[in-house]
Image (cartoon, rainbow over all chains, first blue to last red; front, side):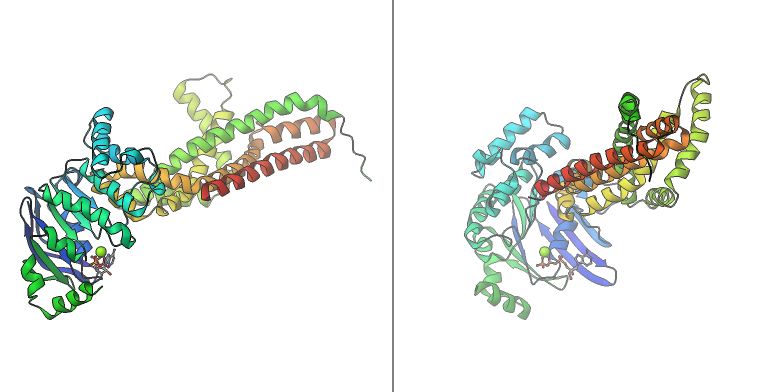
Length: 242
Length: 225
Ligand SMILES: Nc1ncnc2c1ncn2[C@@H]1O[C@H](COP(=O)(O)OP(=O)(O)OP(=O)(O)O)[C@@H](O)[C@H]1O
Ligand SMILES: [Mg+2]
């Protein structure tokens, strides 16, 4: 479903991704973790073409992301993305947040988009908030709306960039529960997170990044039981003892 | 001591009102067209295509470095004859009002585009990224997500600029077009009561603009609240 081959990227002189390679099969859930600034966000932004990269190849569902002439908008419509800061559109009601791209990007009718939106709000437990503005919701509710907004486009895979790190602790689980449900339903997911409980529950593999490189990639149980590198061991002891 | 005589004002009110309508008409058209064209210029200015961005920067730079009066004169001297040739109008057709509207719109667009550019930049980058991530094209993201928020942020500034513009419409007197100021000048000149008429016109501008500024301040408080 997603194949990242030997990708390099730099901002000016600073190399932020180097020789990154990873494959995600259909229906698989991958957790990406690593210290701040290690390039996790940059990696998943490269996957849906939000950031360009200089070298290497990324293929998503048969579409080559970095090739000139690739219709990036069409690709992104098929790849869901959830941001740390939610990024709901504050000037629109919740329901309009969920319908706008269905109508403007996929060309669905308003009624069809609305039906779909309400069904998804139901699924994340927020149907009665459809006519509110995002600012009237708690952080956890906003993030669930953001997930529903992505799902409204029937994505073939979902990318999550630290979806719970801007949340108060008591709201983290309501968001993780939605994500676990998605994973159980067979969604292909790449999740940047430090929630190791979530990783244990649904991830098949964990990717550990440091200084722009993927320094470790292992099946989840193996990664937690015996991390191969010192950096990963240090990192794990830090996030697990929180 | 100067002997004030205000007696010519009541009789002149209908004529002054005609002038006020001209001033308000020019302001309305220039604000609407200036914001529309200014938005296009702002988006062009922020484009990653160098030629597009340079054109917008050049346009804005040009109009911001020449006096408004001069732009108005160019338009009064050039545009009417141009339009007459293109549209085959008779020489009797008065194009001064249309020229004034075009001139103000083009000039104000340069100022509006700078306000709008700042407004666009005030919207967080994440909003654009989220719109793009949903499959919107860059223009769709701008139109549906960034601009509505930008306009909300900069509404008070846009209105303040409109108030300045309303005052600046008095400059059309260079074409002898009877806007409010021009009408007041004509009446005062005719009756030999220029000082009174100009004081009166000044008072009207002052009251209108103060009231409008006060309304903008109220609005700003509500938008920010
Ligand atoms: N627009 C940018 N311009 C220059 N450098 C950038 C830019 N965006 C990111 N970087 C740098 O790239 C590196 C990787 O950033 P990235 O956001 O991918 O890290 P991250 O692993 O997601 O970190 P965090 O856990 O803090 O979110 C960092 O050193 C960062 O300073
Ligand atoms: Mg990050």
